[in-house]
Length: 480
Image 1 (cartoon, rainbow, N blue to C red):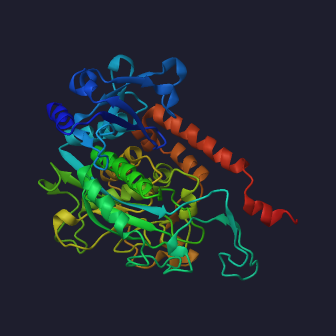
Image 2: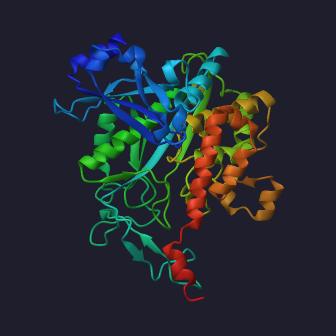
Image 3: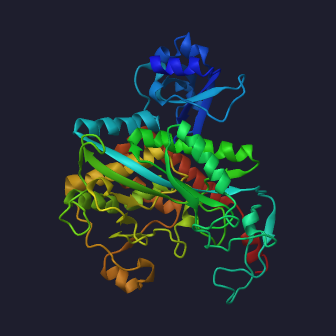
């Protein structure tokens, strides 16, 4: 707390953005003058707010909640130089009335913090390194439909009229300039890649926010799909970093008249944005303790503990999907043909599997498993904690993941997939929610309040989608 006060004073901070997340995963903030922290009692007493106005939190008769700051998370927002606007951002947990106890609606405090503490009591820790992909458009008008008269998923065979779609403005798809064809954007250099300067600037500012980027690049899709990978962090910290990453990405884009979107699938017939989640368990603290996933005598450097952890991820994969891919749009990503993981299996090196074991560096501290079924529309506190719980359940119950699949799963015949026992992830949000509803472990992880609120919000979202008449339906069925 003393260090936080010092930072606020030395940097001339006037306002503090107080941050937390709702159940859906939307970042929430409100501003408090810095003097309330440096001269007042905001650090000790927190700030009261209306919990009934936050999706999934509280009903109106129980609406008083208290946001309690976590001073260790305070960071000065580095791109704001105006002394009047000088601001910092700080995360915190949500407490019940009177600040009596952690609120059961708080994804950070009630779910992520609690499970991280339980893991610590067992003498262990976990780290996550998410690969968060997103798009940077020059502009996007959702009312401007482009009619694809000659484009269809099957290459024009049969029904050659493609559906109307919303197309972003992007010089990467402007035929009058250097352009990137669909699915050909990976590692493209300038001038085809128009996002290099934006990514460099974003990397610069993220370091001031405590999010250290290891490398960044253009992703597979055209129209400005990018990825910046940051160094792994512990459970609560990685959730905070997720929000700082999105916060900075959107604000730096807006400063240049651009639009950063974390919508999983904004482009028809091109790759979508995922969030591959690297994770590893440690005895003691990460990198100073024992790497529990590593076994130097194994051909994949993989311990039996890691195999059981993978078994837990696969066992709970269908229910995990509701938390890791929680939007209607997520399931436009989880389809064959676009590098998305839809088959429940594991493999070293193999990116067609749901769980991959990276084989880059042959040393214990680098051994990890990568869960590929998440996307950036999730609530990170819930998604990362659910993955951890699934993996720990696999260790507890000694769930064997089966033999690794060494072939391209996309190319296997249905008969071969059945022989190998390879299942599939849910194909719609409704299917995923039904699997979540029957998974007792996931319900226990979330707690009854968050589970019930999440299910209610997401079933409502599904029903809204089912009722909406799309332009595609008009085109497809008007002449019946």
